[in-house]
Length: 272
Length: 224
Image 1 (cartoon, chains in turn blue, brown):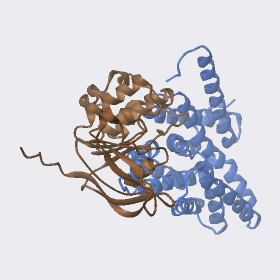
Image 2 (cartoon, chains in turn orange, green; image 1 turned 180 degrees about the horizontal axis):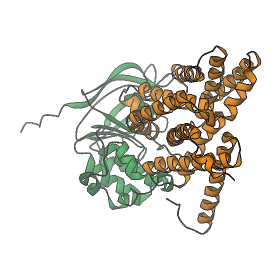
Image 3 (cartoon, chains in turn blue, red; image 1 turned 60 degrees about the vertical axis):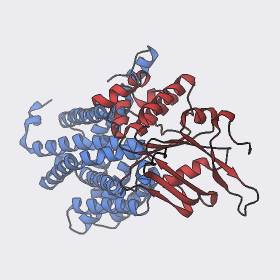
Image 4 (cartoon, one colour; image 1 turned 45 degrees about the vertical axis):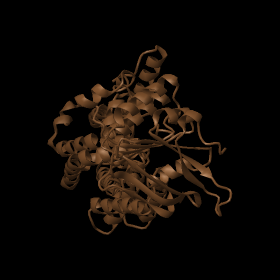
């Protein structure tokens, strides 16, 4: 096993892109879990993948098409005043069908489509890094404003209507943030890796953490550790990154499940 | 000796006919001022909760109007508090989200002991009654000066009902509370006024409208 590959400069930029995404995506996942809309990640990811492939077919950067398609989905959801996972079910279907049709009717489409689904983080370039940095900065600015409003909307659902608040601002704002995040993540690390980083860390944290802040902290930490493990393992073992990170996250979920089941069985409280 | 002037109303309802897809209650007129805890009583299906929901802006106003004093924020506590599983939000965080700021010395020290110990717990690990009490406290301790409580005694055993009474007494002085309940004894004992929704069979629409009930000692008017 050649460990020197880990310090190869060629992998520094992909490592940095992935680190930023592994930190931010679980935070978005926690809020999606809170809203009962975890399927959003997969919905936006499918739209982003289809948009990215269309952009590539037109000779444009993949990220531009992915962002446009995912943002279009967020606006459509807001305009239709749809909430819950149903809207994302339709996004998945629309994105999947579009992705395959575009792939079947464009040069190298099938190969590029597969790359988007499977993930090619090691080929991430400056555009992906710029997207990841922009996502991290936007999240750092927007989430502190969005978070209390989204928590209130979920836990005190009548408050917005009773006080005639312009709730569409924070609901659409968060949808756009998720759409942007999934577009950036799908273009750089692939559809399923991005979805797994949104879903699994938040799922584990929701079961174990006591308190919302800790849930966010645990989500990000689990995402980062799983990402670093998968990145290293995939490089050393010469495996594709996307399936590797999904497998590591699934192992984390299994471990968490076993641990909490054992603690419940022995009458202890939940971990925190 | 002249009567003390009534403080300005935080809520004024004038000729309100309310419902969801069709009118089910009204016309109803009432006014609430700070310091009042007004009970809304009536038979099942009389439209108590619909009236409350319309005042909250959730149901449809078919006629009349609902006016609030300028800048008055409203807190609404539904019949069944929203409960999700899993939900890693603690009681303290719920109060903070509601603007009740349980972390500050003032509110935390006011909190009844039975609720104090719920603050560090996850909301999905407290009982329905405990969650209900936390929600009522959140509604009454936030920035809202108009508080609408729908069946706040639901899910509560006598011990928890006593805590609810304690909360109402401690927190309702500087705000107006409109409280729907089917428990006459509770309303009679703890409200400054009780209004009853009654149907008058000789009216054209036959929708329930409000009458004031002021004879607490003898129970509600014999209309049901």
